[in-house]
Image 1 (tube, rainbow, N blue to C red):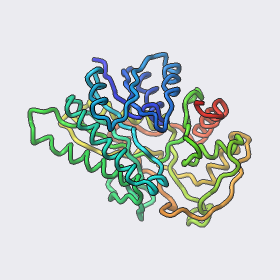
Image 2 (cartoon, rainbow, N blue to C red):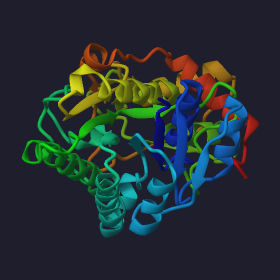
Image 3 (tube, rainbow, N blue to C red):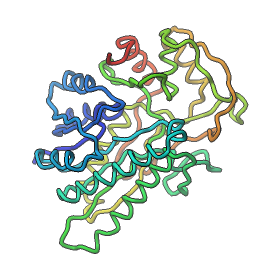
Image 4 (tube, rainbow, N blue to C red):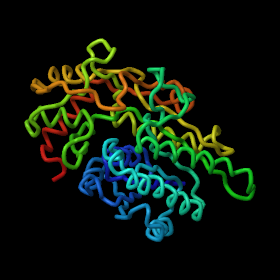
Length: 348
């Protein structure tokens, strides 16, 4: 039996890389994306990289009828749910937009999945669900305490999915929900071909595309927010993971959902990170060494809500999903730079 995976938000940064890995692993792929913050050129390049076709529907997941038509047309067996807005700052300015898109959109998706009796779901969650913690290495059993609307949408969706999974015993005639919640740390990098990568609209919100655009001359200067944290060089420390390693975790999650561990259903969270933190200055210095380009930067005041240090404990994903990050920081930077050089204006 061929597994057909629906990838919501599949034209986006992480979604497009997931499509490559799925196709190369023998899955059939169906993508739905409203193209609000993505470009369908990425999907053409996914097919170029893999030499395999995929099905694409320009659909907003909040459009229940359009989404139901996709399920009626395609033999979908499982879903990877990436579709969502993801900028922390924007979520603070427009919280209702984030709740409507992320939370309501997920509610529509799982209602349509239930109607179609498709109950295997891998959800794109985030380490932001943890919020501030006295621990710098995060384990999955830490309390949830998101401190911004974006993180709270992810935490709410996790709660919804846990509650949904817990209803399985009430209707023994129905197939159980099998759900993996994947909590990402900081995805960076690009496909080694340089054909797909991160192409943010406007000024990047994330560190690595900003660094790359400064290095290539598209942006003048990087602001490093805070140089007085209690860390070795005073700048914030985060766990950066190569996007290809990250999406391979989704393949492992789908395999786990179809295996013995989830035979009776269930909903479980897994951290996807390297287990090692890198400071902002370490990223800049490694980037300069790897590319031979100067990255102009200035120090700026700390941002509200930013933590001094956090990184993943990825041991549960290794134990239960047989997954671990393989690529180094040098790999992440080399692949980011190849993408930037080959595509100075992104997909345009």
